[in-house]
Image 1 (cartoon, rainbow, N blue to C red):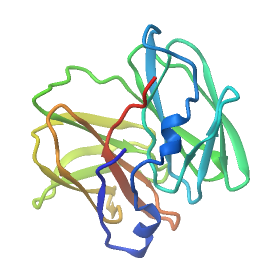
Image 2 (image 1 turned 180 degrees about the vertical axis):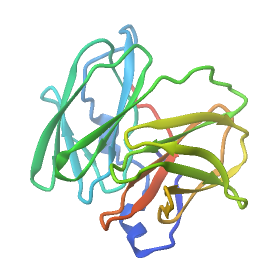
Image 3 (image 1 turned 90 degrees about the horizontal axis):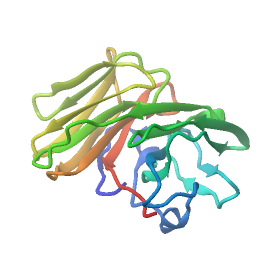
Length: 223
């Protein structure tokens, strides 16, 4: 995930500043598949306070720094997939079975806990941008996303482990969010949205009892 800019409004946001994905991620293929295989798509989000390593099937580790969002990887559909998550000396396994063309985001939390967020986008409009709001914070009750100078509510009442999606006009997007009455730290500047592109805005814990936004343009890894 690239093209991300943060307008930091608190010291905690430095922890979650994102850059481009490391080249190593492009080379890390967690599951065997190919263009002729009926597939879904999975990605990992680091919602923990430390670096995350993900391994599966004896492949190399996918490493994500704090606040980083991985690319979607094609994986075989209708087949149970297991990954081992490692965070700050803690490890845990997560298993998931995807439907064809389903997009699954696995948020990795402290102590290697995880949240699985499922999405099967419908009716994509190539003349619009597509934006999803993901609540990857177990402590964020009633996630709300607002956009623009008028703070227009785009999504509301999004529970932890859930997401909401809609098509929007390709305009410049400044995003804020909250959890009930509590504001999530900072403003997320997605820049000028591009028609035909997908974007994700994710609420994650800030490590101090609050919430913070990460996000940017979705990307898929090569087969």
